[in-house]
Amino acid sequence: MQKKGFKSGFVAIVGRPNAGKSTLMNQVIGQKIAIMSDKPQTTRNKIHGVYTTDDVQIVFLDTPGITKPNSKLGNYMLKAAESAFNEVEAILFLTDVTEPIGGGDRYIIEQLKKVKDTPVFLVLNKIDKIHPEEMLPVIDKYRKLMDFSEVVPVSALQGNNVNALLEQVSKYLGEGPMYYPADQITDHPEQFVCAELIREKLLQLTREEVPHSIAVEIESMSVADNGLVNIGAVIFVERDSQKGIIIGKSGALLKEVGKLARQDMERLLGSKIFLELWVKVNKDWRNRESILKTLGYRND
Image (cartoon, rainbow, N blue to C red):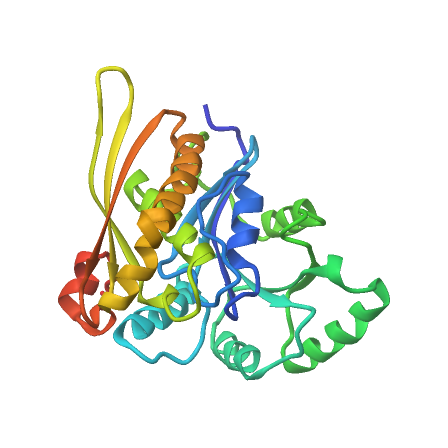
């Protein structure tokens, strides 16, 4: 039974690549649904995470980092991020306080200025990495660029001040329905999250030339009578040399990817997992519309 006066709404998290958007999402939800990596442009789709208490439900959209696109996939990612501005009750502009204000931040701010009647929060992330006295000058610099509805410093990784951020966001939401069951943490199907977990491990374990040439598709997912979940996944790369890197010597790297991804999947699904991985070459897939649609990247 939904409580009287229950609030709900949608909130977008935007920012430059590597600002910590996925980390914040996972911290809020309390479970990994968005992948994290020290490599930019990790998030490719708008990831919906659902935060629910007795009084409020906030559906967060973790958008791709906004940067100049250099492929059809890049164009998709940019449109996915910018379209989120018009779908929400509030926008969290996440910035990295350890980095100076750059062209990417200024570009996002210019886009945010065009948004009408939607509160924009300045969320200053990674405060655990600087001295508190360094905060005020940073805030002043951003405030000169835009009049933000709220300014909230946080550490997404450590969770510092994240509850205060959630309380502030809740104040801007009106009464509304519970869009998702109280125990649901994402609106993405399990196959999507599992594919993202595999991609995360690949990002963590491969060298610089490989990460953005990788896509993952779950080809099969079934549950056996004994409760074992069988998952078959294909890892797409653009060149034969990348296939060799991902498989590794005697299959060692692929085996490690499978082991780490399986551990995260078992935590996510609460079941034992049997995971099979294959690597296929699909030349220049990031610029091929048909393949992008097959993998779930759409501009419509």
